[in-house]
Length: 304
Image (cartoon, rainbow, N blue to C red):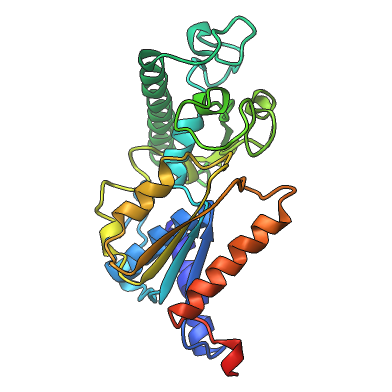
């Protein structure tokens, strides 16, 4: 995530210095939204000098250019928080995805059916955080072992099994919105939980710590320490039937933005990917174009 911030800063500089753009607006959809939040915070008040793995990468010396505005479309808070709310807490052995605690295997044929009571959900969430922390601890141990060992191997890839498991997808009463029950943005959650393309399915030690670690990722929202630095004009667009981003993330981002020049709009009945909803996708684009022109961030074609 630290390198991505540097890359994004280079492109912003290129847009201004080489291509001649007067204003640059970050439009972040889904994970791009949390990236934009992370980037703008570091551009306004850089604090990061090392990655969570301990590697030196000094964003305070990168002179990251600030965007003139930020637009969030169906954006989540961070990769780390989203993965933790989706990771399967029934897994008890990372090397054997079939070794599971049946009490929290909500996709099992013998599992209890929704709606789930509050105590179960609270324990489910706690076990999700615990699993994330176990993987984080393992990554730290492996990096330290490789450092002590020396030699050319200083990184390692690994698979994270069963990362698409959220009680929201089966129980629409949890963080309710207009999403379809028993479904997620990638299809049947029971299938994608064990499929090869689930969130964070393939990772490396450093990548896990930087992107996915609930406790260590620099890109995770640490209370309001990051969002309060966001000072340009902002627009937050929420899809009311989003089947990916948790319903709680949209208002959390909007409420935490310190700028007074912010708008919060909703695209009614829109899913995360706008599958089969071209008219709603068009509405989303028209909304952000209109906002950009009203805020003098985009030229008015009628005046050209």
